[in-house]
Image (tube, rainbow, N blue to C red; front, top):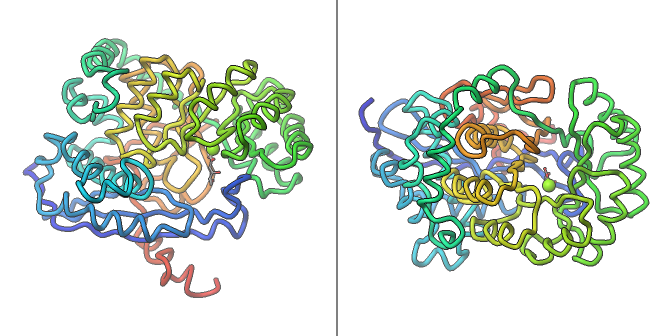
Length: 434
Ligand SMILES: C[C@H](O)[C@@H](O)CC(=O)C(=O)O
Ligand SMILES: [Mg+2]
């Protein structure tokens, strides 16, 4: 296909009123309206690129504004001028000499950069007529390396080592792909255990999820200690002790309280304890992990960039790395993080509790398995059973596994009617009391 020319970027403030049913609630984020700054890249052809960054409602307008500002680096360019030097494009977005003061590489501008960068990858994959995982896993290792910004991480992962991982892991790729085609990628469900759900609802949803074939379950904790344990035992009564249960505190505690509470929760035999404390507290995570060795420690959904992940790995602070497809600066930065995790031998289990995150991360995990880690051991992708009906190419789950996405792109395109109805504040979902 001839090179595409990017003519415009539209950014939409999209919000779903999930808080009305406590969907997505946790001990800290008690009333999330799953939302997104949603980017559409227009071109001189019928092809468009779609990308979003996940938000919780209020503040989405700030990410929209930031993405509108950053879109100047994509408009009036050919697609190939970006993809041939993808690292430079990502750097333009994350390193604008004035805008970067608002970060750098964190918060609103990082989310905005992610939405745009992911939209470019979506467009690129559509042009190549491949799902993103396939585009990535068929790219030459050297080409992938060219997309990664090694600044600030080459002390832990030099580009030559990353290249070596990608080159050696090509071996066996066909067999691994055959396995995924047959069985899918293992997953876990969070949808039974939201913080705002009653005990009856948690029991019923755990039972239903078990009947649907789920074997890994996650429960929100961080409330009253006795309540957390009681709710945990309800889930255990339903799923038994062979199936896996993870607990997620969403940053609720200081380090000392996290140590105490994680020890108490150990009686539930959690497969991991997630976000026990503030995500910026790398040494705090290391201490919790050291002082409660019987429980594995997971974090990542609020880790802003590859530099923080580098330190979590160097400090031996985590057992499970939960990258987020649009908290860091899109696919490019996630490639860096996946490669670092492989170097440190820490499994990646991506965060997907939000809108569009399941659609995104399935591609990253499949790529990880095919081209980087070459392992499924201790690896599961999160699944939440909400809002998939709004996607043109939604995730497909069978028996607790993600099936391989087949359509070209990054699976993130939202249906036109949904874009209209849930646009904030004038879409029908918000302007009328439906
Ligand atoms: C606010 C989100 O729903 C958050 O609770 C998701 C999360 O922590 C997870 O999926 O893990
Ligand atoms: Mg979480």
